[in-house]
Length: 446
Image 1: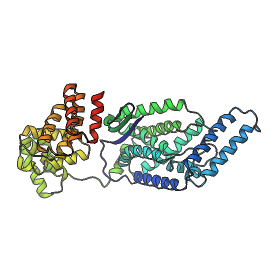
Image 2 (image 1 turned 180 degrees about the horizontal axis):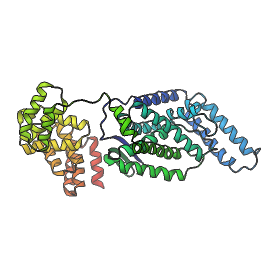
Image 3 (image 1 turned 90 degrees about the horizontal axis):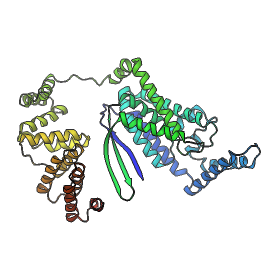
Image 4 (image 1 turned 60 degrees about the vertical axis):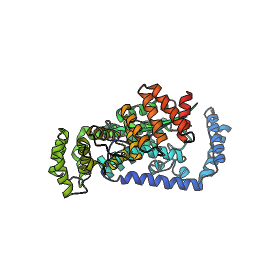
């Protein structure tokens, strides 16, 4: 089994994505309703199998009065009677029979919790950023129009299918197509889970420029193998993606995005930055940290809530080895950056603190975050140094086993196989009952 899901991207947003949140909330409420009124899984599977078998038999029939066609209608009636109380039955889109309203409503109902969760993860990935870039209403229009476009693509490919279409994936695919045009430079954080002879899991970063076209190519290939009783409407994914990409490209090439959408979305979000902070920022970029420090202190004296100035002051203190400033602030800044998944910034900040020579004590949590960030940045030397600190300064910490495992993975990725094996052996010997130790044993066995 192989599972791949998005956890987010490196793109920040400036406001709550209310339309995206509303769609997720509606879909969750609808799914709770489905759970309450749906027939038993066994009855539903039996009826669905009967319909699929009857559909295959009816496709070979040559006469309208053929018993196979009668059986197909009976199977369809049986499934409809079983599910008539569900929104899936009431809102599913049937090509040639359903209305435009059904084309919209079908995007809010899903065929189970896994179907819903998978779709909502992808919606959150692209919806937040598109809604922030264009505004609530333009993104809502794209989403709803994408739902209709994906349904139209499905109808063109399967005009006589007995299967009803449900799910938000076509509308979300439109968002993915638009995201591929507007945020092609974004880095997407993906989580993977592999279960075969042994279980593997982890995360990695990939640029949208590569990830989304690969996803589209896979959907296109699967759509070419689709038939009228397919359980997954890949043609809807293809149609939605192409529609979203075309809309985003048209908005950009026509100048509508730059002249109207982005300025309207930015309205009310502009601010005038403190000139002293801007000057300090330039000095930091020029490595003139000592000159930047009084400017940052002045900014914070005027506005103690100036978050960028607080973060910059920690960076400057790290570079200067200013222990008095760094000691109360370094762990908190590492934690903030780690929670925002800004691993490169965590790595850079800790490296600056090392170079500055301010031997500041850190919590076990902060050191574990540094180890994770350095592993993400493939700096195995820093991983090993932070790991030694963690073991020496927090010998009884519960985060050590996981940190040891991450250290071994970083060593192995850097080609230090012997060091990785020693680290894994140390983990197994010292923490035989910890859950992560089982992963270490499997790695040693392989």
